[in-house]
Image (tube, rainbow, N blue to C red; front, side, top):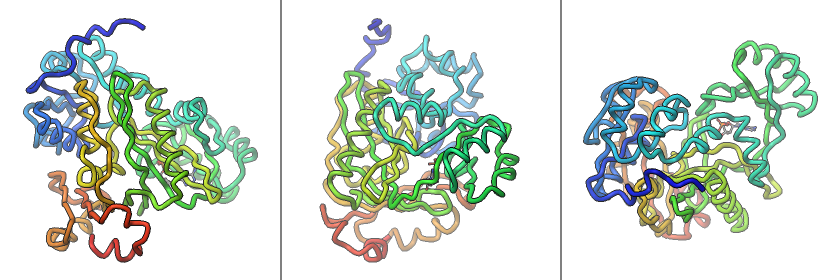
Length: 380
Ligand code: AMP
């Protein structure tokens, strides 16, 4: 193992500065957690007045490949982290020799590319749905013949919240889907007849210690996360398997920070890996109010080289995303609801489909699975 040239910087002392690439809500909530732990944050993003900048000590507004701006940023901070995984490879090439970057290149590279991610899941012993790389319409037809229909065609890079995807239900869908998504590299996946979607969040420190939260169950609306139920209402063995997979993925990626692994649950109890996000994740927002140490605190602890905190769940929780004008219209109700905390991201324009904030409703520990969903949701 080669010596880490930055080892002497850690643990970061109080008042050290953590640089965050990306200005969105995940960076904002990481910066708020960092402030509680006595650190300052410096946000780097291509546009001004981003949610993270509004709560941070310093900002740089520059392109992700601006060498001069990145060098000045590296000199101004003690460590760098990311609030999104689609950082250009060039950005890391510039930053890595100058400043410790957590997580490192391996985690970012694997999670930027669905083909690498699928191959990685398999190498880590996490089952996935049948898949094939697709570079031409002929390859797509061959992949459909092998995998069958229905299937989902996805761009391998830069897809999120269902963007860059097409469901193929019949042969007639092949040509239009190819037309719409090519010439980008694509992946065809078997359509998974899942009963539930689960995720598990794991924090990992530079010393290899891991801390995993309870697995949660996620429901989407218009391809955007709508609700997370913590803990997932599934048999204990399924939840444990999700947590074990997440811990293994974090270890194999040599992650320093927090990651989320999303799974499909099949009717027979099998979990299939879908995606890995090497950062705090929307399905972990419930930890802000239901756990002693939130996913954002864990992320900052890992980046700063502090010991990880407790992932213990002291309450059950349901998280509801507040999306667009419809989500914002719930605010008066949510402000007066009992045991509900509202978290807003400081975005001014409530456009359709835009995540504006979320609400966490708390319930007595171990009560979620015994309570009707309508009763749970009536509160938030
Ligand atoms: P993704 O961007 O891969 O997380 O996909 C977004 C959402 O689309 C998932 O949360 C699922 O609800 C759905 N989805 C994605 N891939 C598949 C698949 N292979 N089979 C069934 N549903 C899928």
